Image (cartoon, rainbow over all chains, first blue to last red; front, side, top):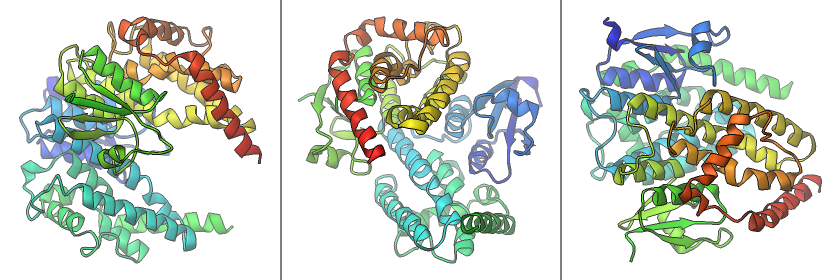
Length: 231
Length: 222
């Protein structure tokens, strides 16, 4: 591809942060070269492009690197204005999207690992917290989807949808590994219909890691964590 | 009634960031001091999710979370911009703002921790300051380049609050010979007129931080 608009993405197959960026690039129709990183043996390229965090994703545009998925998503939106916008125009609506994206990331995504890595009382406590926060999210997004959700078109997928999918897109995998319902259509009907509508969109569905591979990975993580706490 | 209202609590650096942004853009606002031990109905109504300050209320609509508020202010009042024009430079500014947010638990542990925990936190905090000095600030006058920007506001607490915290803890973190550029920046930052006129009084902050520190020590050793 032309040097002037070369995009490279350094990533890892199971990173939700990387999935966010990939989905954004695909939604906008931006061609890119993907480089899978071995996180146990980080490449000199990764260390050069992200010396501060040494993590993926890293987007390299015309040789200039950017790290941190939220930062990258806003950069993509501001740089490629031809594709569908990831944020609305109105500043107040933008603030609402950023607020809830931050909520999903900080309040939900960061609590989920404990649910997988614990059992008994500790897991019950972690789950309770997750369910409480899902309720808050259910309530909160009523303002963003005032008419409910039936169908979401490809061009209307935005930053909040991307963050939500990166965290809860594989919710059926989580439910299988944990043996319980996480996104219950009766308890959180709006979240359920939101995810269902998003997963109907081919590019969104394709952005999820392979079901069986993720099941295997999470089961391993869970077993490993439980073994080390009981040892 | 002012079109813009800010719910805050002294001496929260998060609130000051919003105050600085509003004042740098000459936006008039009404300030409401919250008692965090007795949160007002207004705060609970405007920020039911987190119940925290700062909250900006513009034309009756509330916005919470400091970084969300600052991006909103930048978009609604674009004069005297606090973010660079070019998307890449804007992204770098946001990266460092995010870095500050991500790493704040380490600095909190420096202030909050006792004994070994505090020593560990001090070591970690110095490593972070090194990263900020070398990769974030470099030899620039401000984080944003030649003029003050949102990233400078994010690190503003290093300028107005850290010295008082260091005195309360009895440990120096930001030493001039280890972090010459960052130390110089703290002075440059404080000399910006809007900042100079809107900093909490160190003489008032010291007893406040000392008393907080005593509480942390008491709960750690009880």
